[in-house]
Amino acid sequence: MTAREPVARLRSLRSVALRTPDAKKAAEFYQDVWGLDAVEDDGNVAWLRGTGQEHHILEVREADRNALGKIAFSVGTPREVDEAARRLEAAGVPLVAEPGRLDQAGGGYGLRFADPENRLVELSTDVEAVVPKDPDGREAVPRKLAHVVLNTVDIDAACAFYTEVLGMRISDWSEHQMAFLRCNSDHHVIAFNQAEWTSVNHMAYEMPSIDHFMRGIGRLRHQGVTPLWGPGRHGPGNNTFSYFADPAGLVCEYTSEVEQVEEDAWLCRVWRRVPELSDLWGTAGPPSRDVRTHMAGVPDPGGWWEE
Image (cartoon, rainbow, N blue to C red):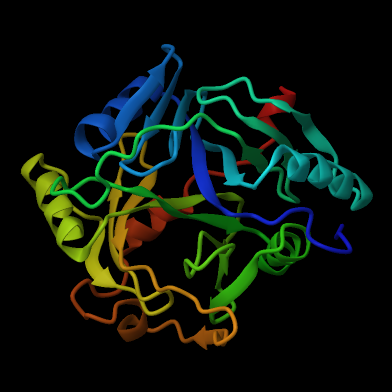
């Protein structure tokens, strides 16, 4: 199913929602250890923010297993949301939620639909504003959600949907194993990894600078939380990386210095999957079996909203 033209112009990756059996413990980790701030919490759902302008960048919700709740992208106006609904219908993509006011922390106007692997996608605008919290300040905490990496059973179909329907562009490939997609100047906000089942691979949170990145790793070490992999610097995206596991076993990443794309000059490349290109610094080495197991996650069939 494809649209004749993209359904909307995506401005940015806004937030991600996670479903986990112990949402309270996960929320405490992301607030007390990871560095996010609680915006709202109703007991079963917590919304957390970085230091940037988004109302929240992470939602953690109680569920019976680890799964992706949704991915939210920003668009410009309510009219764009309404037009996206018409274009999705024309493309044969059914809506999970029609355009309207969003019943969630931060509100906003938006719609929701499922992608081909039954992941929930939200397009929203007019979300409540928050005061930026000195995103370039001294404190080593995340500024925004940098990207989400998703495991897919069909990387070509996933890329086709997100490029043809949602208008994203492929920045680079890591052989035919990973694809890195952008919706703005950031090298990637979504990446797909070919896998045995559909699941969350990891979420990355952007630190303001490499100094913030390293001090953030140091803060976690002082709290007894050591990296699964990193620190290092990736080839595709040229971003720094250090991967950790949250209490539910989901992988979260600190990153910084994500490569910025100049649209008219950028050439998509295919990177070989060798240690010296997965980590340009040579400090992290290749990912271990333990890291790969964490990133594989558990099978996530999606469709929880139909239960």
